[in-house]
Image (cartoon, rainbow, N blue to C red; front, top):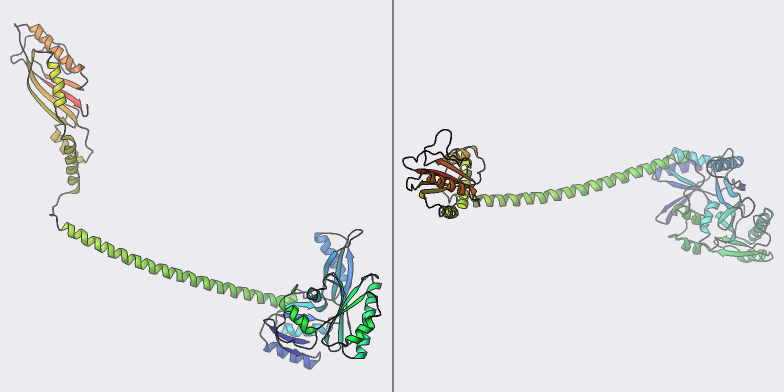
Length: 510
């Protein structure tokens, strides 16, 4: 077990722990002293197996059931396993191609997981180093080829992983080193044997070229190239660690002299999935960590929002306070002007309704003051020219608001309107005339007819709305006489004075 401290793309230290009781105790103390941050567990074990399968074409629940049965057939007792699709076959039924991978034996790893669980350290994921190697292929520009990647993560082990068009097909761990002539010869023979195995399993066709990419610090290039030169369809590439480190963006130095830091950087940087093998119970502390982080983020956002709203309300309150003070100053200024103007007038105590009625009466006088009896007298003169026997003695003209001639007088009506505070009625013109009929040769009948014709002419004109005879120049019996609506006369003699009174009503504006 090697523990890496990684921050901002840089490794600070690497601590190794032996799989002994003392190593387990040191690892437990290390976790208790470390911050409770999520960790990635990168495994490179000989117990990891890879099995290629084809499953029938299905969807939904049926496909999920088929995949579960296929995975349990290979890893019945292991929780650290997975099955991943890798495309479809080009011919035939075009079944799904899947890769079932996992740890067949988890005895050693469970001891380390138990220590991590007891320290309540959040496990972000359990990552497979060979599967993670798929994310390294684009950096070495081999993601579209058939590649056998050879890398060394420990002093005495060598990882060989075969990738076809970016998908892992097979991986094995052998006990070899990349330094020394003897080891180089053994490595060359082992690589050749691995390629022959791939061709026998039809993972690599006989006429297909395989690219052997060796990632090592200082390998014996001459020996390996010499041993592989006799094999056809093999292209060998040596990738220095320093060059690969710069390509993937590792800052500072690698934690060890091997390529384990390259894969550890890929795991910490977040290339690809964050988990390959970890089950849901193994990641429960990580879910708690995410929930705690989310709550802190929500609390921070809520606090920032509260501060922003409080600041906004405070500024708004200050603006309102300033505006209120300004309005109060303007109000006091207007009150001072009002008091100054009030003091310039004499004080009087008159009820508001009386003042209102007086203003209305004054407005009426102003509007009605321009009326004259000129039109009425002109009409009356035109009619009297036709009746020379009618003599006009007096004529009085005035305006009235009550068209009913038997109602109250204008002064009484005005006072009643002031008391009731009603709207003023439209004005009418009233003309009160007093006249007499000339007596000619004591012809009574002629005088009566002349008076009747005079009344009829008054009623026929459109100028007067009502012609009311108040007093006739005749003595009328109860059965006949001239009234406001009757133009007949009796044959009695003229009265002593021979005078008459007539009231003429004309609407305003006619």
